[in-house]
Image (tube, rainbow, N blue to C red; front, side):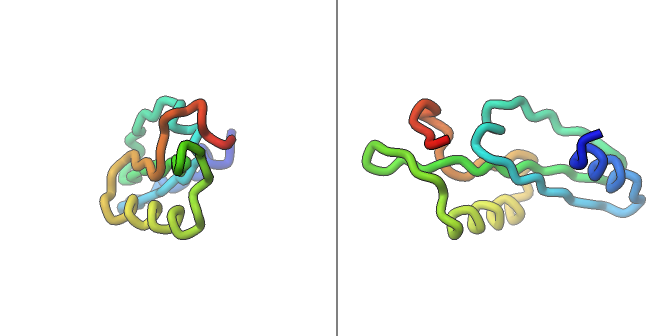
Length: 93
């Protein structure tokens, strides 16, 4: 069992509400995301993408990453994407 799957399973055993944020890279924007209901566990996914500037892509700065994650927590959405997803062919990775 993957460590993240184990962690979700373990946290899902709690009788108390638990909120888990999974932070992933830009490739996760290409994966399907299906929210799982596990007891009182609320699972959120934050995807860090890239920025387009002057026709070129660049990775997010540390400040953009931290602000994106903080915004995701504030908004409480199940899926939150920070940065640009398209054009995918222009991403740096």
